[in-house]
Image (cartoon, rainbow, N blue to C red; front, side):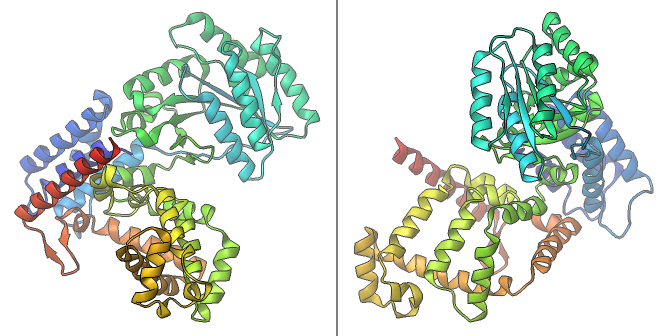
Length: 492
């Protein structure tokens, strides 16, 4: 997410690091790179210009702390202004009597019906009782798709395949909602172009006669300024309450996220970050600014861990650890839970200072499901006693295990080494209470924010702390490129 923007902003700040003193000329030179980064991210010219002017005025003024060095001051101001540009946002969905009505609208192909399903799942997880209304009468497949999503989630779907009037469908759906004991009704309207006067008039008619409590505009983030222009046009016709940006996980630029609130005045409420029904997140401007600046997003990672990990299983493992027990079966369960968070590069993108490295990994990233199958194959080749007591696995046993799993001995050694390291890490981390775990990760974020340029500096070599020379960094880059080429050849 935002790889291109993050890299360009990082380079802009890096160009100013190492200067003992920044002059007005140096500041303007660096901020011109920031302006260029925003424009290439497809932010509007107006937004980019105003943003840079505000940062420059604040830096040259007296609004910043002199306890920070000049480059840290600029980064602090840029971070604050990014948050201000995209916020504030309230992602809560109001609770009204007898129910809350949400109308989804947007362009054709923006992912509106899928977003309806995602929003329904989010509501279910928060204890709400949603109902879907198939008000898209332009695309027959939309009704089928919504019924399938409703079936998967156990959410009732109001359908009338005979009607040609979406206003009538919505009105009758609201009457039925009272009988079904639901508290949120989501109207999935037809996609339309904002230049189609007839269909826009139809949408206005639905809003005027049905009177939804919230109107959300669903738009593809990867369309950049087109997304902002469309949101502006829809807002003029409907008075939007929020925007849902879809496909944000594939957006390397970030122009829509940067500009939509500033241009339309309408906040981004949710973001779509994948194809599954779980892939809808509340929009947090502070976390998004942190990602854009390459400073990670630890709080979102914490929330993902809490939602994906089995608390009862973690409690059972904690009891085992307190007894000094961490078997290979426990290791497999830990790895399986971790794999639910996604690929390694995705996890790294949330960790302060690791976003740039995750971008370098790119196609080298391993498939978590495939990796888990390999780990499971090796562990399944062991006896129950070996899984309980890995210390008894000698060279003879390793050869037998490797042969049974169809791998070489080095793979078995690697697994045992991973288990040994994990045992120590998990034991230390599990000794903390859940509140202390969150505090530890929050402290990591605070430290990263206080000294961001410690992360933006050159990569370090191994565990020695020695910085890589320019020559060594170039060799490292060449090795990564060679690995990418080799992987592509294997795929072919």
